[in-house]
Amino acid sequence: MGKAEKDTYRSWPFQEAAQIVKLRRPDGERPVLFETGFGPSGLPHIGTFAEVARTTWVRRAFEHQTGIPTRLLAFSDDMDGLRKVPLNLPQPAMLATHLGKPLHVIPDPFGEQDSFSGYMNHKLREFLDTYRFDYEFQSSSEAYKRGDFDEGLQILLDKVEEVRQLIVPTLGEDKRVSWSPFFPVCPECGSVYSTRVTGYHPERQSLDFVCDGEVGSARGCGADGELSVLGGRVKVGWKVDWALRWFTYEVDYEMYGKDLIDSAKLSGRIVRLMGKQPPVGLTYELFLDEEGKKISKSVGKGLTVDAWVKYAPIESLLYYIYQNPKRARRLFWDVVPKCVDDYLDALRRYPDIEKGKRPEQDIWHTGDRGSAVPEYGAQVNFSTVNNLIAALGSDSTELLVDYLERYDERASSYPQVMQSLVEKGHNYYRDFVLPNKQAREPSDEERALLAKVAERLGAANGMTEDELQGIPFAIAREAEVEPKALFRMFYQVVLGQERGPRFGSFVKLVGKERVLEMLREKL
Picture 1 (cartoon, rainbow, N blue to C red):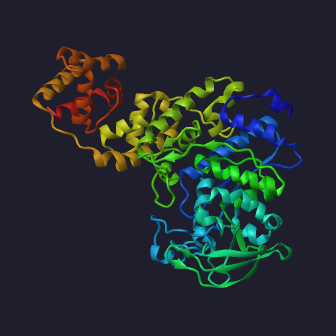
Picture 2: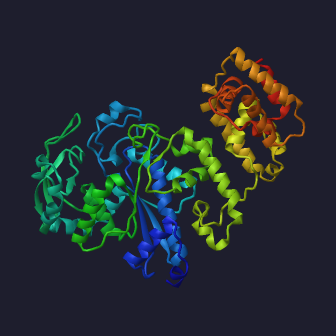
C-alpha cells in the first residue's frame, strides 16, 4: 500500500482505483476481481467494447498504485431468454420460433457457431482480442451447469420472501403477485420466459413451476412439475442475477450505464441480504447515435468496432472512449477524422511531459500504462490525408505518401503511420466523401473571384503558409466580400464539399501548380 500512498493522480481511473482501496480494502490475499457484463441477445457494439476498455483502465491504475494482482472477468448471460427478434439479424422467422428460450440453445442465424449466443460470444471475444485485452471469458450457461452458483441459489431459495420484499414494491401492480427471483427452464419446451413459479421447497432445493405464459407469439407448452434450482435447471432474473454473480465471484469492481442505476441499487441490497458487499462501481453515460438516441444492439444503429478499424486506428477509438465517461458522447461517422487528429496530437505532446506526470495523460492509459505509447512527431494528420486524397483523386498509396513526405519531411520517419493513414483515408474517402462530392458551377461574380485567386497565387513565389493564407483574405477585402463566404465558395466549387482545409495549408500540401490547375478548371 506504500506505493498507493506515494502516487496520487487525479485522472478518473486513479480516482476509481482509490475507491477500491478505500471501500474493498484489498489485502493481496487474492487477486482483485473486475467484472464486465454482456447480454448476447444482439451483436456487441462500441458500448460493450467501451465498458471493457474503461474497466481495464481502472484495473491498470489500481495495479500501478498498489501492486496487487487483478483479474478481469467478461461475463456473458447466455442463459437469458430471447424476448424479441433483433431487427438486424438474418432468419427472423426461425428466431421467432425460439422466443422465450435461453440464447445458448437457439440456433445461430448466421450458421457459423453452435448457437445464437455462441455467435455473439465469438464476436465479443473477437473484438476484445483486437486490442489484446487481458480478460477471462465466462458464459452464464457454463457457470450454472458447473455449479458455480449453487451456494448462492440455495441462499436465495432460503430467503425468497425477503428478496421478494425488496423487489416487489418496485414493480407494477400486475406483476407483484406472480414475481419470483427464479425463472425455471421448462424441461419440455425449453422456454425460460413462459414459465412461472408456483411453490418453493428450500429443504429439497427445488421449486414448483408451470409453463403457461406467452413471449411474443410463443406460448408455453402447459407442462408443470418440480425442478431443482441447482445445475442450470433454473436461472434468476436480471437484478438477482447481478447480485448472484457478485456474491459467487466476490466481484470488487463493476461499472454500469446510467440506465442501470436503479438495478445496481437493488442488486446491492440483495447481495447484502445474501451476506456480502456489492462491488465498487462507476456510473457512466451512454453512447448515442447521430440522432442522439442510445445505441441499440437489436436495431444495429451506431458504429461498430470493425467499422471504426476500417477507417481509423483502434487507438484513436480508445482515446475517444477514454474522455469523461460521465458525459454522453455521440458515436457516428463524422466524429472519426477529428478523433484521429486528436489522438495524433496527443502522441506529439507526450514526449514533452515529465515521466511522473504521464499517468495523468489520456494517452498513457490507451497505451498500456505508457509502455506502448508510439512515437509520432510529424504534423501530418487524418485531415491532411483526406484533403490530399480529395485534391489528387488518386488511389496510389505510394504517390500520396510521397506528397506527404514532401509536405513534412518528418513524415518519412513514420512510414507505418503514413501507410496506415493513407489506406484508412482511402476507405473513408470512398465510403463517405466521394458519394457526397459534387462540385457546383460558380456564378460570374464567383468566377471572377477565383480568377483573382489564381492570378495572385500564380505570382506567389517562396511564400510561407501564412502568407499564402492571406491571398484569399486580401481578395475578399478588396471585393467587399465576407472571407467566410469566399472560402465556402472555394470549397463548394473547387473541392465539391461544404468544408475544407486552410487555403495556405492546402497549397503547401498539394503544391501551387496543382491548386492552379484545379482553379483554372473552373474558370
